[in-house]
Length: 333
Ligand code: SF4
Image 1 (cartoon, rainbow, N blue to C red):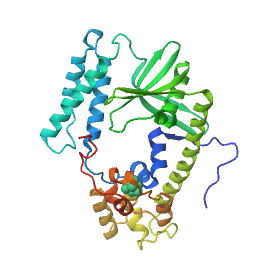
Image 2 (image 1 turned 30 degrees about the horizontal axis):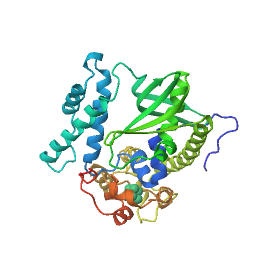
Image 3 (image 1 turned 90 degrees about the horizontal axis):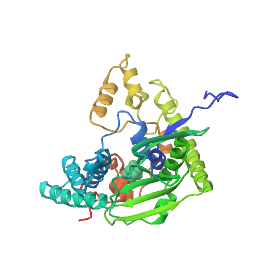
Image 4 (image 1 turned 120 degrees about the horizontal axis):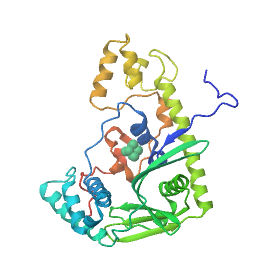
């Protein structure tokens, strides 16, 4: 029987990042692949646009860690070059071309900054909690302007940004709340700095709008937390149990043996073909099988994002929702 929480017992907080909550909202199957299935199903190849984004973020963070006199556009270019991530590009020529573009981006961007204006935080981890959720995340840059803090998020994608992106971002709002609470300083302003266009998209939250975002985060956290719990119960079923068995015509041995817990149990005397198959699947980065009930709880949400999903190879619905993409197709060539 499912255990009910005892009256007055503190409820376990759901610990997460805004990214985890957003993944739950985008696609529950992707959420399961990303955060629950262990070993994690194998991802597709790295994306070149992510390599550009990570390289730029790293260079900008490194630039602020340099001593004041070295905070020049040239230093930004050198940092970018030294930390360039080559993964996902079609070939060396394409990688070199984008290295040049990214170098121009970071050196151009830092030339608009005052090197003496030290941020309060760079890639700073912030955290906050409510009765329901413990949220944490990393802010690209946290500025102090006057008596207030400002959350700055760098963007390198090709899509132009709108004010709505800043206003509706759960992550930015959570960061503002967390930074404000941790540093006991007001923080209402959130900004997206779009490096390819040099545009700054800003939004000024009110206490009420921040509170609305936090309540929304709690709602999503409660949904995801309940689904996580059900997943854990299902994976913890002893092999051979009939409860929670799926419609895939598999025995409990075959699906339960896939996760880490299942592998441990399998090692305790469930030797045989099912175990060997489970281990082989895990070694290949395949998706653990779960009961149909759990699969339904983590339903796919096929749509345009599927072409860019790291796990589409494991998702028949996603593969039919959009075409395959090359790892470099996200670049604005
Ligand atoms: S391919 Fe699409 S539906 Fe499938 S897991 Fe990824 S985002 Fe979800």
